[in-house]
Length: 571
Image (cartoon, rainbow, N blue to C red; front, side):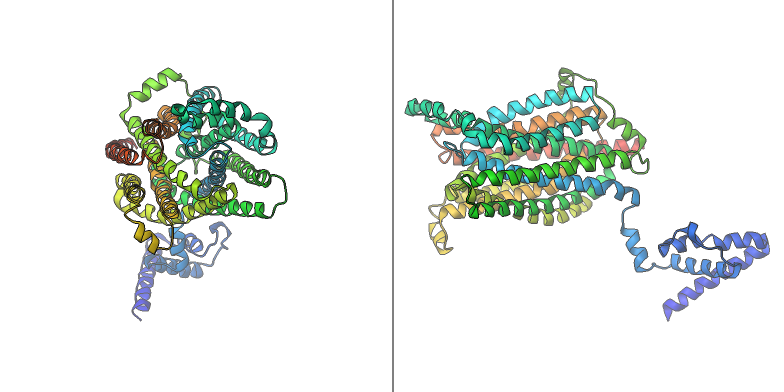
């Protein structure tokens, strides 16, 4: 009754206004006043104002009073739903961007799981090969690619660079599955390397790991290309494009949500890897893994083609719409950078902002590498068969995607209520806590034997499970908070810092971080004799690296806040 009286009171007020208008301005002016609220009423019911019929004066006045009453109240469920939806121009932009991220991460998850299976289970290889791969293959490859990318940026537009690089990756992975791997026995110098290893003295036994790279050189190239997909296509091409067409306020709302779709991709890609691994169990082929590799790389190629199609759609339908992308952003995306390699390096070295960004990426790479290699050594001991190893990695990827979905929802609220600075501190804190638990289990496993026996498992399997949980939590916090924080930090920068700075930070910084962790592990292996014996020293290095990471994150938060305030003042 109270609500009914409230509505009628407002309707009566509208009648008084209409009467006053008739008296003061004449009949024609009053009818114009009465017809004005018809458009909002039509929009509230999902109708186009242009399609509304011309109404009689009395009916028009009645509808205008109803619209006023609806506007003064809280509105119906449809109005509330429409108020919560993003504007159509934003939806037109972020929907294909989110779909691109989904398929890029779908392909990357398959590549990440496959590259580990190839190099860890290869003849004469193991988890010990990974530090040497990251230092002597991945890092030079990343540096060479950065030089190549800088040259491409000076010669071609962003659209041409994006399309050309993604097409190159698709061609390589297809060629590897259908041509290179089936002929690996003829391409690999297995007999020559076996002779060298047999002739090595005991003091140089540590050289067997780098020699395994030469023995399985095609797998090492695949490993490097898979790593570059993560650095180049994910970090450089996709996020570079997204940062150019997205405003900071939009990024705060949508970047965490991009990960929701992307981590659904992790779940589905993990299920796909497990499905393909299951097919190998019933295969009667001489090499079941070769058939599975073709299916896996077919999924990667299909996802890459979808990414190219979505990118072309955005170029034709989104980049040409000024409501979606400001003309200045379109002009910036077509601009070719003019600074050379030396000038760019000098410019970036003089920027504390870029240095702090690089420190974040390098520290993450070093930290995750230190923990991950130790875990994969345990993983190979538990699953020496490539089929079992691949199936476990598929389950690992699916679990990572599921946990990250939850972290994404939490991350959106962390950005909203605590800001960029708090979100940037979550990932190093998570790595510190989970790393401490994992290394404690390895170092003090003997004293925990009664507890392990009570749980009905073995110390090896418990280390595998705890290490998997540590990696899942660390990667989920990276995908949900670290990556959005890093990408938001590029938005206030100028065009030169966005392109050249992002290339240096993402393409060089990430491999440099992993190579730094690998160099530490190599030094420990040569000093104490094995990866297992170096565990306590690696744990101490991990905690020092995380302390440097936390300091850089606080420094960057201060600079990012100042840059945003300056950008707001200019606007």
